[in-house]
Length: 453
Image (tube, rainbow, N blue to C red):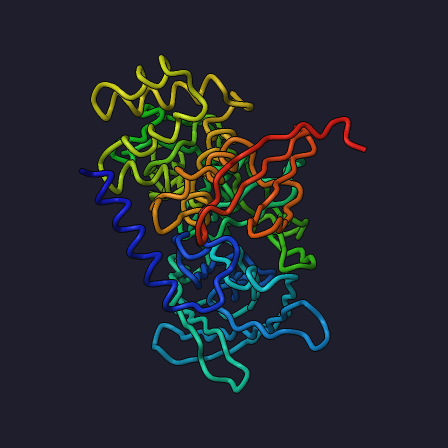
């Protein structure tokens, strides 16, 4: 019954989008990925002068939320985005405005509808010491506001200019010199191989050693649970006399780098988190200066692009649907064993199977499991028919789930019959589907193409 409710909900959402969008992209999963279309975060970092602070604002905007126009005589689409930020002081008076413009070009129309791709950008501003309230807006061609968001700026600067910034959650580079902010609103990406917490500071007496504690408070999933006992502690790395500056790259990419500023009153602290411990859930982060607590904050580790077929475990409070998708890769005996017991037991067996088939066993993020259930999502939405509500149950859906996207697709007409041929070079095989009715394809033959001339 729970599975029926889930499928009915997804089917209704799909039907609404058919009427709302006349030019459906090939990959219709774009309509079902969740997340804020426009999000920004701001961080205070020390400036050279003790009388001012530098504010770094990072933002991301979903492609689907932006207007794209086709470039004349080209099969490409372009978006010109202008972002405006205003800073209001502690009295609510706007004392500064800044704008940042960028161009984004994509090759295909369906990419403009993507809810998994984002324009990423930043704005830097140096202002006198105060407790500011920033607001960020996305402007249209005529200067009208398409979207706006108020940004939390939790750092408090005292009368002497001393402060510890709110944590910046980022992925640290292999060398440890660069940081790429997640821009997920106090969240760390579960898929990151090198998550880290950065706290900038300015102390009149110089930066003291700080000790950190990170502990898991609770899971965010009812059934999909990993390690519940996460307790980390140690000394934060100190970078005295260093400041954070943004390194700008092309294609809406940037990172933050620590640079020598020479002022030993300024700097930042770095806490590198072990990816193998950072499983989805809510965490408590504490900084201590000896016995005194100088910071306490919470953050989430989130699997932001978690496949919907796995999210269904929480949506429906049932493991039935996710486990049913395992039928194609298990023996009858293995499937019957997994498809029995309570929901907790079924999820445990599901995770145990993928743990055994994890290509990177040193981290809890399982690329093989993510790929398989992402294929299931694609199949659900793209190969469904009027007769079969779940595209993963169709012949095309099954082949896609097992082998992924074909290297080549061809449509062939023979008499009154229509065929679609999928070619997989790495398998040396082609799969031939016959159209048996409108939109319904049946697998009729698998050919070996290894020795084909």
